[in-house]
Amino acid sequence: MSCSQVDFGNITFKNPVVMASGTFGFGKEYGECYDVSKLGGISTKGITMEQRDGNKGIRVWETPSGIMNSVGLENPGVEGFLADEASYLEKLDTRILVNVSGSKIEDYVESVRRIEDTPFEIIELNISCPNVKSGGMAFGTNADSAYGIVKEIRKHTAKMLMVKLSPNVGDIAEIASACVEAGADAISLINTIQAMAVDVKKRKIIFDNTYAGLSGPAIRPIALRMVHQVARAVDVPIMGMGGIVTGEDAISFIMAGASCVQVGTANFMDLRAGTRIIEEIETFMEREKIKSLSEITGIL
Amino acid sequence: MSKILYNNSLTETVYEIAVEGSFEGGMGQFYMVRAWDEYPVLSRPLSIHDLEDDRIVFLYRICGEGTRILSKKKPGDEISIDGPYGNGFPMETGRIALVGGGLGTAPLRLAAKTIRELSPEKLDIYLGYSDEDINSDRFSAYADSMQIDIGGFVTEGIDPSWYDVIFACGPEPMMEALAKKTRPYDVKVFVSMEKRMACGIGACLVCTCKTKNGNKKTCKDGPVFAGEDVFFDEL
Image 1 (cartoon, one colour):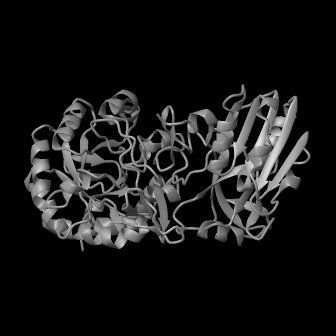
Image 2: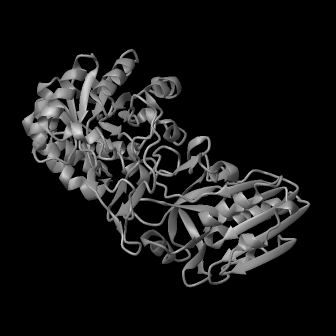
């Protein structure tokens, strides 16, 4: 079997397949189903400074080839994460990305400072969650605010700082460039696309929060376009995501410029999507006589 | 992938499907069922209706694209089923009542069978349907007495003082009414909650159920909860 190991900046991933934040919890549940150490990495459920209960009402809704979610960052808070979840993740033989979110810059900073002493090497800075009313996506929707938050957080961490971008913007390349200029080591994209659903019989909006985040195969072409745009604008490694279900989907993101990919909604379609996609990537490499994924990264 | 033994309609929209194989599971647990490829995106959580050495049986209603596709499947076709998941009804003895509303009767058949094997002092079954009897004949072999209500409120016929334990599954208003009605009595009430699920294993948090002990995952901590924990009056 081919080797799909990749260098992502100065960090090596055993393969390019990372489980996306919010779809994989803190790894334990999937770890009861298969060996999650076979994965390239796991991005944790988004962590905020304080514990959060998340949104009320319906939290998931199906659409053609996708789902909308409005979980709203339910999480145990950074202290709960460190006390109850970190030790399990530390034992895994895979890269752990700690996804950090918040409403205020001070909260992001405090969370990052508390994570600094852990062995986890990558912070995924979520400035793109569409499901919280204040903060979240607001930081990621213009270049100045994105620059400001990344610049501030850069002062407080020596870890790899990867910024997760929102697709709900006009010029994503401009925002990616601002993040890199402010000190981001890597970029991940795309978060979910802000969307809406209506119950016409009840004449009501489905989600209590009105809008929710659309993910899954429905958004793949948009995600691919944005990864391509960002790859041409910045000179840092990119982690691409948005509706990746198969190995060939992953390869298309790599050809568009991503060094690694994240898999999210596909975990709900196939519990073992992560390891299946790794195998499919390696089968493709063998068939196409590709020795290293770097041969095809960003070739388009 | 597992082979379908039969997929019969009980009414115009309610089906009973049996899948061949040796499966595990307790009363109130569920499987994630998938009879399609990419679309619909999500698998469907179906509670175990019955379990025998060579098959598992589910009860479902056509209410969307997934269950419509499932209803078209024929004997011999293969579908994916993953499980068992969740915490089901606890093993209890004494005087027991089962209360089911509509498709909420789905997990109660295995419950009736399992409880009967434990030889309770008394097993009464209350079934409520909005417009037609779906499946009360599936329960008669297990019950000391049965009460069937069509179009009314099945909870009205229950005297909580007759029971030590009540298991319920059905519409939330039905279960809430039951939990409140039984509050003054020394009776344990367990309810099986239905929420939209995605992962089915407790990772994604889309099926959160609010309880007096904080948010719980319906798929992993539930779907069965103590009624008093779920239907409490918020302060």
